[in-house]
Length: 151
Image (cartoon, rainbow, N blue to C red; front, side, top):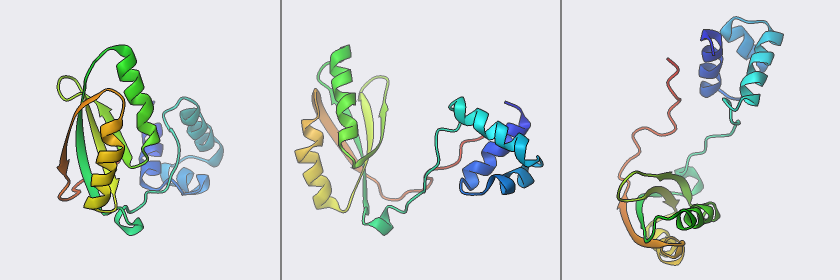
C-alpha cells in the first residue's frame, strides 16, 4: 500500500458516497487508475464495505451501555457457542473478546433504561455459558466511529 492508496482510503473514510470521478480528482489520479486501486483494495479486504452512519438518538436508541461478560467455561465449544449467539441480539452493536477477566466487552444500545433492563434479563443473561454480566452506563459519547489513522 503506497501513499496514493492511503489518500484514497482517507478520502473514502471521510465520504464513502463520493463518485469515483470526485475521488480521482481529490487524490490526483485519472478515473481508470483510481478505479483499479479501489477495486484492488476491495478485493483484498482492505475496504470491507460502504454504509450510512446513523444517529442512534435520532432513531430512538438513546441509551448506551457497556456490558462486561465473564464466561462460566473457557473451552473452545463454550466460546464458540457464546460468539455464535451474539449476532442474534441486534442491540449488541460491538463485541470484543478480551484477555483476562472479563472475557468480553459488549456495546449495547436500546431506547431507554427499561428497554435495557428487559434486554439484560431476557436475552443477555441467557446467552450461552454466561457466568456473570457487569454493566456500566455510557454518560456521553466523546469519540465515535473515528476514521482509522493512515500513517
